[in-house]
Image (cartoon, rainbow, N blue to C red; front, top):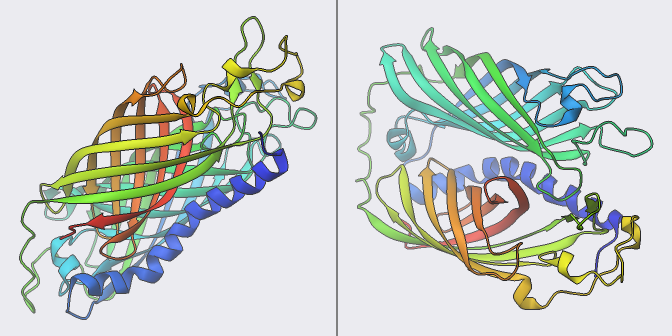
Amino acid sequence: MQRSPASSRHLLSFCLRTISAVSLLAFLTVQAYAKSHDSIPERIIHSIEFDARPAYIFPTNPFFKGFDGERNPNRNALSGHLKYGFKFGPDTYFGQQYPHAVQGIGIGYNTFFNTAEIGNPLAVYVFQTSRIVSLAPNLSLDYEWNFGASFGWKKYDAQTNPWNIVVGSKINAYMAINILLNWQINSRTSLKAGIGAAHYSNGNTNYPNSGVNTLNGSIGITRFFGPAQTDSPATCRKTKEKPAPHVSYDLIVYGSTKRKGIYPEGLNPMLVPGSFAVAGINVNPLYNFTKYFRAGLSLDMQYDESANIINHIANKSVPSDPSELKFYRPPFIEQFSAGLSARAEFIMPIFSINLGIGRNFIGKGKDLDAFYQILALKTDITKNFFLHVGYQLYKFKEPNSLMLGVGIRFNAD
């Protein structure tokens, strides 16, 4: 019932390349999306940004504490980022509703000062930044998130790279959040500095998958091209009225693959050969409180081909070699779960970030009778259709799977 490792590698590459492709697709559809909300011809303000991020690596794995090939601890990292961004002009609907929002595409070069065992991965991602609060006429507190994929990791190999028990894939997902002080030097130039955190992992699509987590500082400079940047309201056209609070309904269909580690009693942890399919449906009514925020409950149904497989080992005795493991297919009731989750969604132009925490009310066995958590990025392609890229955890700490899919929104404003 398991797929081959080669097939798993191709599926992993496809899944993570899909994440990075979101950025390009979002950019190509931004004009059509703006027109669907506004009859005013849009005006785009472009920007270029460079920032440097020295970082501290959280030693969450013995590899980073010094048990690597050279017996040296890995505690430091550094990355440089070049970003193209755009914001909507002040005479557009989005420019008036979200005057400080900038979104775009970034590329980041990372070094962990251990090229031989970790590599120097290159991250490609979408980003969005906007103001949290104004502190002074030319100073504000901003946020920025990054979401994409990173390429060029040196992965674990029992023969050639045995000490790296952290990274199991050459391609890994990349997520980051930064809190920044933004000083507007002049009408087109700003300087940003702050702190943030980053996470790299493969979404449980391959093992090992301990993940790399960093705490970073950040300093960078942004240059806008086009009209001078100002906080004064646009006066050339009157914006549309703000939408009244209402309920919208998101229907999401997603899928991915994952690897499965098991912990047989009395033996060391081992990886089940091959990969397993995951598929699910979310039915998510959301009350739109403001243009920035909506929340509600979601009915989450999921099929996980690997769930509770440890209970169905066909071998009379568990072999020490994982390649000799054989399994019976678990019954459907042990692979299917249904749960309710509380969802909160933060809305900006093009992108929305959805957070959820839930509990399965249908789910048999240790793998499914659990709390789960969801982090998802929705990328609007049209007013009623969006891409969905998510990540699910169990019990606040156990990575479960990626959630790559599409969604339809009913009763959108």
